[in-house]
Each structure stands twice: as C-alpha cells, then as structure tokens.
Amino acid sequence: MEVKLAECAGFCFGVKRAIDTVYEQLAKQAETGKQIYTYGPIVHNEEVVRELEQKGVQVIDGEAGLDVSAIDGKTQRTVIIRAHGVPRAVQEKMEQSGLECIDATCPFVKRIHRIVEKAGKDGYEVVIAGNPGHPEVEGIRGWCTGPVKVIETEEEAGNFTAENGEKVCLVSQTTFNYNKFQSIVEIFQKKGYNGNVVNTICNATEERQRAARDLAAEADVMIVIGGKNSSNSRKLYEICSGECAHTYFIQTLDDLHLELPKAVRLVGITAGASTPNNLIEEVQNYVRINF
Ligand code: SF4
Image 1: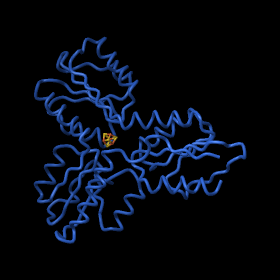
Image 2: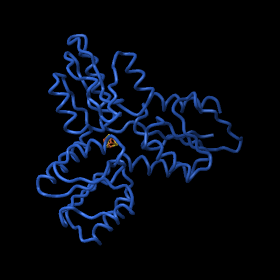
Image 3: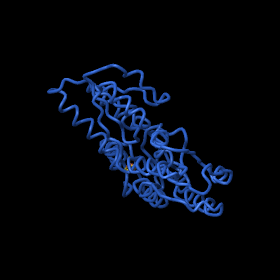
C-alpha cells in the first residue's frame, strides 16, 4: 500500500512567516523581558497555539468583536498581529496604548489593505467578495476609507447597487473560490460596473485545492489534517470528499481511527495551510507503519 502526500500541503508562506515571527520574539524575550501576545490565535490550529502557550505566549481574544480593551493601558508587552491582519483602528489603538505592535499580516493580505485604502480615497465604493464573519474580511473592511460592502454569493452580487454610481472596486478574500469570484465579476460587468476589479485570491489556496483534488481522485482513502476552525482545511475536506468516498478529517493523530480494507492501494494525505509539518509527518509515519 502506498501513502502519498499532496504536492502542496501544510503551512503556506504567510502562516509560516507569522509563526516564525512569534518564535523570533520568543528568542528575544530573554533580553527584553516583554510578555508576548498574539492578537487572536496566530493560526487556526489548536496544537500550534497550545505549544506556544506552553512557551508563555498568550492569546488576546481578537475574535470576539475585535475587542482591544483586554490589552489597554498595558506596557512592556509585545502584540503580534497574525497573518489575517486587523482593521486599521485596532492596530492604531494597540500602538497608542504603548504596546509594541509587530505586524505579521501576510503581505498578500496587506496588499488588499493598501488597494481598498486607496480606492476609497479615489472615490470608489469597495466590494469585498468573501465571508463577512471572517477576521481577514473584518480586517480588510477596517482599512476602507469610503463605502464598503461584503458579498458572499452570486445572488448578493445580483442584488447589489453601488452607492457611488459606477465607481466600484471589487476585491476578494484571499481564500475565496475562484469560479465564484469570476461569476461575481461577470454579474458586475453586466450591471455596468466596469471600475476596478482586482483578483486578490491567494495562489497558495488554489494550489492546495488543486493538489488535494488530484490526489483524492486517485486515492482509495484520503486523510485531511487541519484545525476544526480552519476554513481552508474544511474546504479541502469538501473537495476531497467529492472525489473520494473514504475521506477523513482529523485535527491530530488521536482523531484517526482508520480501518483499511485489504484492497486499499493508495492512501492520500493533505493538510490545511495552518497545519504544521511535524503533525503531517506523524500521520504519514503512522499510516506507513501500521498498515
Ligand atoms: Fe498569505 Fe495566502 Fe497564506 Fe493567506 S493563504 S496567509 S494570503 S500565503
């Protein structure tokens, strides 16, 4: 029986960069003595967050309405902004309250912040194709300098009317579905909104999804490793389930209760962008040794 890992799996560039930033700060901690926080979990993976907590890194609950009151007025503390980014007001509030603020927002997300900021100043209404409840979208919204709307479906695109006539700047959440984005672009073109369309979907997502689909199509059993709150991992699970009836979604090796019939020839493994390499290797080794 063969065990194969998808061509692209695990940490993407932005997540790796954010986690490396936390470890760099931990290394400096002996000199600075500063308490290190991350604004929200640095990555949607409980294992990684637990490991960092054991090293003394605390999580400020950025998820609950992006509330910064928990960190107001504290000094000698470093806060790291995770790859998803935060609204401008949140970042400014942290800086004003005397915290050392280290921005580990993924450069691809930061690019969207700059696009929407400029678009608002140039008189465009910004439309974000994405999930309105996702922190990345909350963050993007928070860098808009004019009217902004989030739409998630083609139906919402059909019902949309621009406040500023035809001046619309359309961007996407980095993990938005490419085909859906294209449909929204077409709907907007039919409406006569020929403004500014910027496809800001990140390649890392597409590459992972394509590699997962290809592997699931040939595998007898597929294992998707990812955090339960990780939307890109759930998406991988959906894609793999569509190709392979025996698809498992696990967070850690403990969740894996595999029963493999003798006829199984290929077990495929993939992992979301927030899954660390050691976890992937652990699952890979376990399947290789035990089956
Ligand atoms: Fe950055 Fe793309 Fe990773 Fe998001 S998925 S953190 S945009 S590299």
